[in-house]
Structures are given as C-alpha cells and as structure tokens.
Length: 153
Image (cartoon, rainbow, N blue to C red):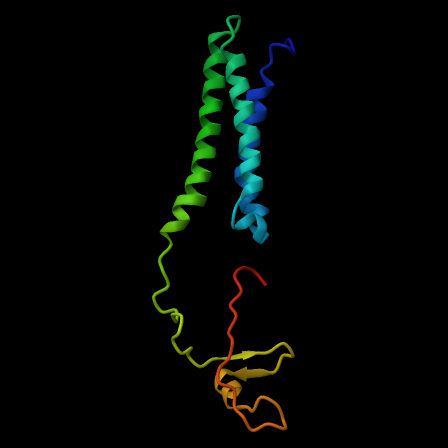
C-alpha cells in the first residue's frame, strides 16, 4: 500500500469527531468552564470538520478508486452526523428541560429547611431568623441571604 494513496485525513477527522463527542461526557462535563459552554469540544469538532473536508477532497481526486470515494463519503457523513448530534444535544435539547414549578420565585418566602453549616453543625432557617445578629445586640435580622450554587461540590 502506497502511503501517499492512504487518505489519513478522513480517518483522523472521523476519529477526532468520535473523541470530541465522547470526551464531553467522560471528561469535559466535570468542569463548569467546559460544561456550560462546550468550547473545547467545539474546537475539536472544527478541527475534525476540517480534516473531513480535506479527506473528502483527496478522496474525490481523479486517480482514486470508487471504493475509496464511497468509504470516505461514509466516514465523512458519520463524522458530520456526530457533530450535528452533539450540537443538537447541547444547544437545543438542553432547552427542553422542564422548568422547576415548585422552586420559590424571587421575592417569595423560602420554605423552612435544616442543613449543616460550614462547621458541620445543623442549623435551620427559622433559627437564623430568630437569632440576634451578635451577642450584645437584641435586634433580630430582617432577612437571610440564600446562595444556590450550580454544579458539583
């Protein structure tokens, strides 16, 4: 087999599109910077698309066989389908998630809860609202700021 006749661009593009697709689920979803906007995967997909394009151009050179043209076309279509499915999943299907109907709205009173604080001691919202601000003061707090973090702990 002549190495000049081997169309490595199409194979590299197809394999890179598989790696870009799988790496999001297995690796990049663990980090908020690449989970919220999958820029690293989009860069990998752009490189894969370029390799697929170059591979298709090489496959349809006049001296290539019909089998090379068909095989390269199949690999290119599969690579493009992976790219399209990833974009569909991350940018379109993510918007189909249902809204949380039971979540408190801005301005509503939060339901009472009991959770551990930073020191591991359990505390409740009612305790926070009933406890004076400091030991020397008898003034009770007017509110509590609740912060909800997205993502993993």
